[in-house]
Amino acid sequence: MKLKIVLSERLGCHAALHVSDSQKIFAGIQSRHFCRALRVTKDRSGSCFVGWTGDAALEPGVLELSKPFADILKLADGDIAEVQAEKSAPVATAVMVQPNSIDDWEVVELQASFIEESLLSQIAVLSPGMSFPIWIHGQMAAKLKVDARDDNKTECFLLGRDTELMIESQKRAAAEQAQTIFGPGRDFEEQHLTLRVLGMDKELDTPAVKVNTEDLEDLAGYLAMEGCLVWLSFRRGGGGGGE
Image 1 (tube, rainbow, N blue to C red):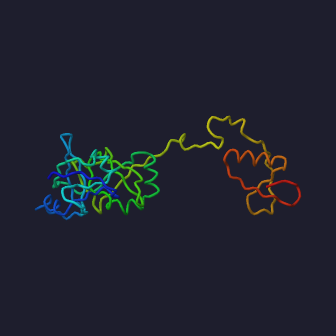
Image 2 (cartoon, one colour):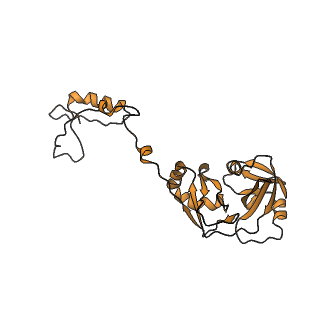
Image 3 (cartoon, one colour):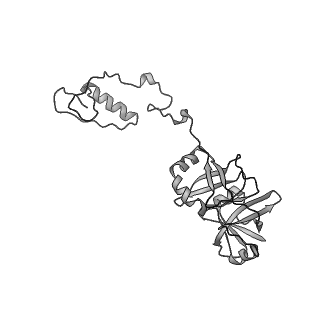
């Protein structure tokens, strides 16, 4: 069935179809899965796959998709594509995916619980090597990709409520993680104060150090210049020093 691609602000990768179109596309096809797979063919370059969970488009003759997902599938607003039901999509037992970047992995780490709870409401049809966006609290936050080592090799497959999702971890290199408080390109030898460590008063319950008043102004000014936040308090007791 020929349908026009219409892009929208949908928060997920599931497509929307007008009820009259869905009845024609899925006529006589039974499925117990909550999501139906659609094969979308725009030209001879090949097909892509999207899922439909019952969302209704406002007008007939259109396939409504979120813009970020359509961009990944290389579908543009107004494109005409052949859309048909995919009858042979199995439910995957397990799926291995990887973040598109280290930034995406860090989002996954921070929002793992939310992704676990909401992923099926955003996407349930995948294919080998496919990339897809995920939304966190209403905003597109990361992109994932079906790993090349994933065991699912059919043209497309479904995520089920019992499907195990394995996400490959990524870590930043140590050089990327390390941040110098002196700023880039500065000489460490020129950016320091030399202070002698002395014993603390035994009556103090919290970590503290004493700094001679002659060094206090240089120390506070130096740390402030380098972007560090410093708390200083002054003891009225003897010694004339600051802590």
